Image (cartoon, rainbow, N blue to C red):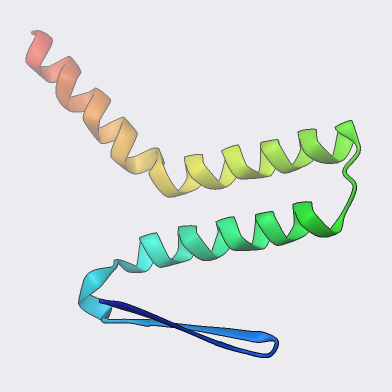
Length: 79
């Protein structure tokens, strides 16, 4: 269950810990941060490129072990 409360200039979102993982919450907050940045700023093409590279680097850092372990298990099954 998710509850959203809005006061004059503040949103408060509450939910049970069991409803989301820490990784999901981190990703959600990162998306909100990016959206906020995009709405407030006029990005140049260079800024957009740098942001996309940062997003890819963060994604790879967070998913590298999972992806490599999946590839490793697929390779083992091929022999």
